[in-house]
Length: 568
Ligand SMILES: *Cc1c(COP(=O)(O)O)cnc(C)c1O
Image (cartoon, rainbow, N blue to C red; front, side, top):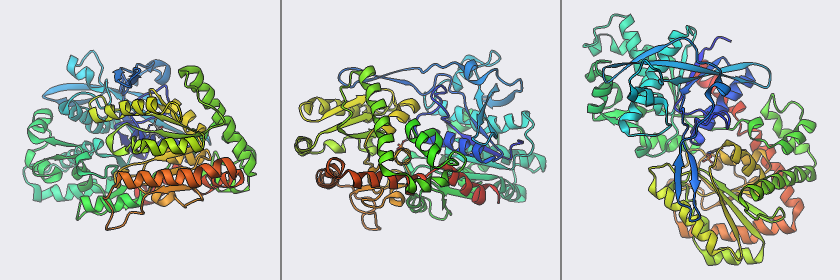
């Protein structure tokens, strides 16, 4: 199918063998394209090759993280690169780009291509050959150059491949914003605009480009938005466009990728309803819509639960909305399917990591990037209290997550979990599994009994791992932030920790109070239900699928993008 929508993302996570993602952003991009393939949406994905991936995480006995490159077999996964080439100018050098194409096949047989841009060509200078080597590696200048390859190079690659019917350019986060500058430049050149006279024709170009562009923001804090100093921009981009003009579009003091994307998009959205409010506070004067994230149902439903869905809901692979009919599956069968997933997981980690987990013990799962705002350590706020809960009811806890190599705080958090694990070893088994990736996530999320999520409000723009849990009948126990504000019904789809955010308490985070509520609910509601009221527990499991799996999926999400952002 001739692509009409070009979806740009710095990272796209499709499967474990293509390790070109670091976390939620990339997996969301992959899940988006998979749903588009299922639904027959004419879209093409564009990303960087990340030839050495993000990194492989190694942890020693004390939880010290070290990193090594994740090498993968390009030819086995992607065949041969396409013969077409694109060019960009970086620091005055000509940099050639080639693309590897991967086809995502949908559940109905439609296919969606993904282009992996690659500068590792003999024709390029050594430093430029390394530009598509490491995802989120290197310094600020390296990042800017990568974004030149992605945004400007990506548009030029679409031209080189003769994809002439593309009429929507989707920027998944600000890393891809330079694509809008490239479209702007093309338009101005075509119209033979005097580039030194903004008012004469630039306003016209701006209006033209806005029709083409769509922007999704994922970051609820100002510091998280990609920015570059103008002397660096000048050095890297050279004569790409007059600097006064770039400043008009990207901000006076520094190049702000989010501003650029917002100024040149006709549709800008946040990734959950609450995130829409946070974004509006961050960027007064701009309009934000919201489309809440989802996950790709067939990717994230484990094989045992999927087999159950196949027998009761035969069309669920083509249409995730049908998961609402999980309400008709006998609850005991859901429990059994989950128990099989749990045994698979427990066997896997006991075999590979000598973890010593017990398949009959209530298991808490917590896995996501190890970075401060996720509050990985909240569960250990009051060790004595946790020990008391663990003496009353059997309890084991599984952690996983990578810290960015430059994130010292994130690395310290992992070490802290190791320390707590050793302090608690007599009462509560705590294990930390290394190298969280798609493969581990699939097994882990489907195999635990409850999914714990404790971010600092309001920093979790959406979060998606709890949606994966819901697909597997695993209830979430979470701070009311991101998607959980929408997905949470107390005692029905899971449980909340802490207050519902309001104007007054939006940014208040009381670790002590949050942890107390966590222990209270565990001890008095969740654990008693799990061990003593199995029928109630089964009911919560089934509700998670029927209420949340049927809605927090990328089939629903892509249909909302199609109707709101891509069609008009
Ligand atoms: C789903 C997923 C994430 C994102 O999880 P969040 O809850 O959104 O932080 C990160 N890493 C991997 C490997 C995942 O599968």
